[in-house]
Amino acid sequence: MHLVTILLFASIIFLIILEAFVLLWKQRKRYFAAQKFDGPKALPIIGNGLLFMCHNDEILMRMYNVIKDYPEVPMRFWLGPLLLIILPNPIHVEKIMPSNKFARKFDLLYRFPKVFLNEGLITGSGPIYKKHRRIIQPMFDLKFAKECTSFMHKHVDLCMQRLEPHVGKGNFDFFHAIHPCMADIIKETVLGSNERTQIIGTSDFDQAMLDAYDFTFTRMVKYWQQIDFLFNMSPLKKRQDELKRIVTTKAKEMTDAAFERRKSSSLTQEFYPIIDRMADYTLEHPGVLDETFIDHVLTLYTASEDTLTIASSFLAMCIGMYPECQEKAAQEIRTIFGETPREVTTEDIPKLCYIDMCIKEVLRLFPIAPIILRQCTEDFELDHWTIPKGCALVIPIFNLQRDPRYWEKPHEFYPEHFLPEAVAKRHVYTYIPFSAGPRGCIGKILANTGLKVFVCNLLQHYEIECDGDVPSLRIRMDISTRPIDGSYLRLKKRVWK
Image 1 (cartoon, helix red, strand yellow):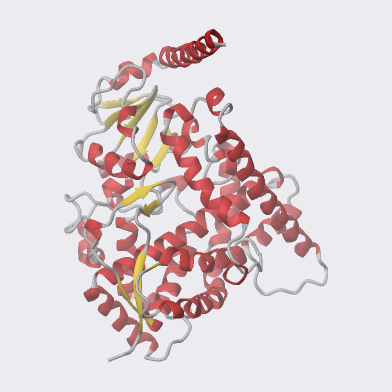
Image 2 (tube, rainbow, N blue to C red; image 1 turned 45 degrees about the horizontal axis):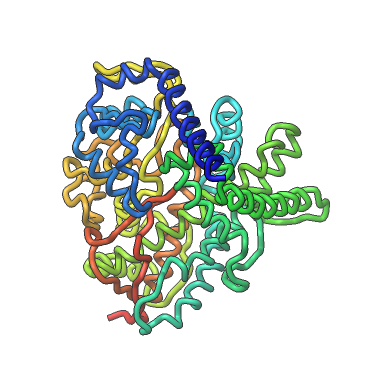
């Protein structure tokens, strides 16, 4: 038995080494091209992978510190046998982002979120992706965002009531307190579901989606979990399959409900959620979205609900940490809305200039996606460098948006970064929280509307207190940027003075 164990272990080690050498041989051209790029010293086989031999909480800042040492030039980084070319210079980013040569996601890493999202708009690529994006993107227009405001208010009003017991009771985790509200907003406006998470509590679907974010990111950065035959023999595979079953089952239920609504001859509804619009298109154009409908449903929920909760939490924390900013925001709200809380109308939103600056500053400090990964589909000449076909191109949004060359107070919450005269001085690609180019976020109008509706309601009802400041805030990344120690803050009843 002891000999069998030794032989099995030796076989596994041999297969790992063999797979690594096969990959190295296949990409020898990439290896020679990489020699022309600066970057940290890489070890054989594992490359720079030791930098990520750490707790997930440490990865974001390790990545930031490595990249900031190469601020001007493209940087090479080996993640095991995978070559990454990192672009910390916005001039280079501008040349890359609009190009269709880099519109494809990097399959070797995006195959992990693809387990849950399949060919949705986040993970899909190629002609089918382009066609489906052209179909779905117009559904998220300004008119749709305006139509959503009344539904947002319904759920935000309930959220304000649910926050009342926290007044004067000390610190509480704001993310967990508002997450059901954001889930309800997206479920109704995007998925057409009347499920009330704020009333019935977090469902298995909600929890499975949260778990899937962390699960996916771990596989993306831990090379030993990327080896399929090892992963498939581990308990992680069983957990992955269970999460996928939960989220897919729920998505199918909502999809079936949408088609039933659209087929109903007696249906008279004034508002059409995104899933109903997709169902209409599918019924009118059979075969176009059929096979990927559920993929898009899960993707749109994933890209909306969690990100809106995170951004709202960071926004509340920053406003609470910086009382002078909170005072300016509150006075703007007082001027527009008066001293009696009321709903935010579509006419109010363009008047929220300082609130808009606060939102932009939060998305600068805590971008939803700290990095963007793209696949180079053919050799690309970038100044005097050749980016080799098949490598991954990394746009380090987190670094770009905290680069002291472009930001007066790079690690502070300073909304004045977005005064018109300050914006005019910066390269446009120093700030890309919603990505850019042919794969830019299609939901940014809806996200901005949701954030403004939420923060205006919050500051009409409450004063926020939060300890510390942004430089002392410990943050991590999974699929998004998150606070390590939670989103703790305190609330006081708003009394206008």
